[in-house]
Image (tube, rainbow, N blue to C red; front, side, top):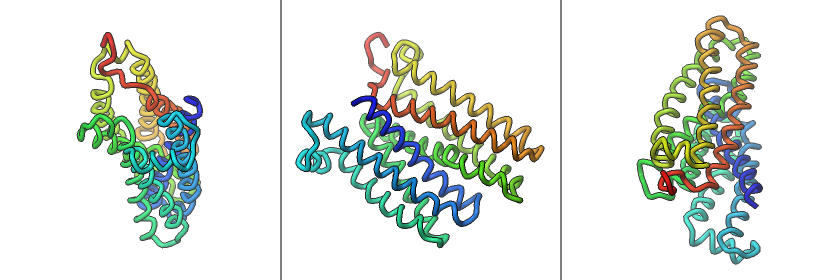
Length: 271
């Protein structure tokens, strides 16, 4: 059951982050059309989230999933309430992203951002009662979505005649996003780990270290893009590196899916 939950969570996170990133790219860096391609992302995110609900219902109740147990979880738990709101948003996003109007994409991008905020509220950030932790986690997800979620349309845009201009603009977005990710990641790390002993002395902390190393590699690739490839206008290399960053990002999201099923390192014995 744990493996299934991890896979379902990973699929949901990838789709939700991509959904927000593609819509942001469409609004500020791309051309009309990318938003419409986000409709399948909203659909898959909803399916994965529904599977997540079923698994959590089974874990909470200890009984086979039924209409009765689902109803109890949806009505009487924070996870269920947040699931309902996210489901409503994702259904609305699926419809909105099929429209060609620019205004619809703007509304959809706001909705996709709200999905990420509610996702943060359904995780550790919303469970410990700390407003600072919740806000940090929400902003963290938004920044990750804007950068990681935009890498796929960015790679495709490197085939366009205006690829050079797009590269500079996306690079700027990446720098801003990375700074936010680092700041909010430090806040989240403080709440989830607390100290160096917990970072290296607990399973949660060691897996978080792996995530940090992979993120540093992503930053190194992004720095090469910003400082060398973008000034040279090497769009082929930029497209290749965007694909590498995407692959690293997916691995990081999978690690996040695992971390979400583990108890935080903070407060564990010996830390």
